[in-house]
Image (cartoon, rainbow, N blue to C red; front, side, top):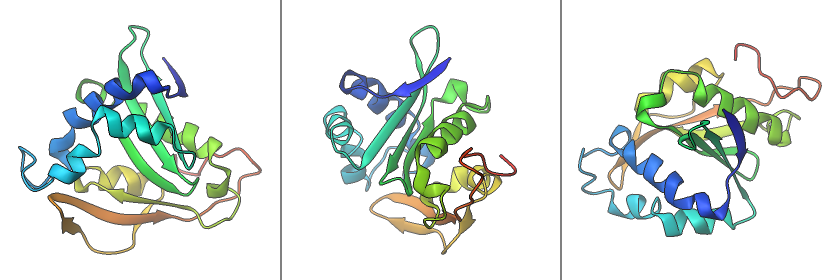
Length: 165
């Protein structure tokens, strides 16, 4: 398994993966009310983000060629997406993607204010284990639910590793 930057031709696989776990963040299991957000996860929208400089995207690929997980960081300081396909959850893929992105996002380790995320309620405990803390109450809007969180910047001599990870 290896992590590599996502390529334009990866957009359909990334879209399929994220949409497969959409029930974890939509208020309605069928996505009613979240149509605009779900549209932003379609292959064309994913491809557009892949070509937009502030967004950095990496995928964790299995030897079989399957995409196990994906992480997207915007501007080096906002964890935009971190999703792992259902069959691969609980196997450390999200943590490995996080550590990789953290190493690549120098702003998060150089004292520049840390990293933010709008965590799904399903993933809140995972983010807390990574050092994120809620900065406000659960938000329900446009058919989705999330908890705004922040992880303070931690300088580690350039290693990008956070204590407790």
